[in-house]
Length: 117
Image 1 (cartoon, rainbow, N blue to C red):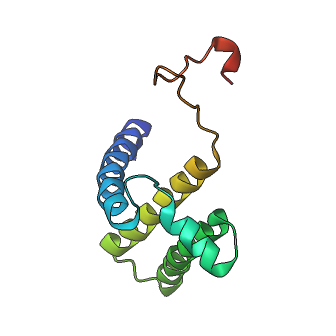
Image 2 (cartoon, helix red, strand yellow):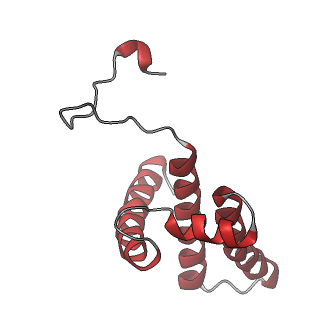
């Protein structure tokens, strides 16, 4: 696979993951809080929401490990599990990333060049 082919592959995977994330988001979160299930699980288990997310993700990581160790690769199953783990990582990143608040006019403040990283 060339670098160009790989770049196209990655772009296509992210498009598919975005659609999958949108679908699963409606199943696993409410309209007001994308992390509601992790917060509720954390409360039930007396752990942080991030720890709950990680425990949910571990199920998929173990499944990927089992697929690899078996040597029998079902491409569709592996693709689904890898996609789930990527989405969990993105959820975790979003969960721990500080978000800008809106000002009184309801607009998000502009980021100055000194704020970039």
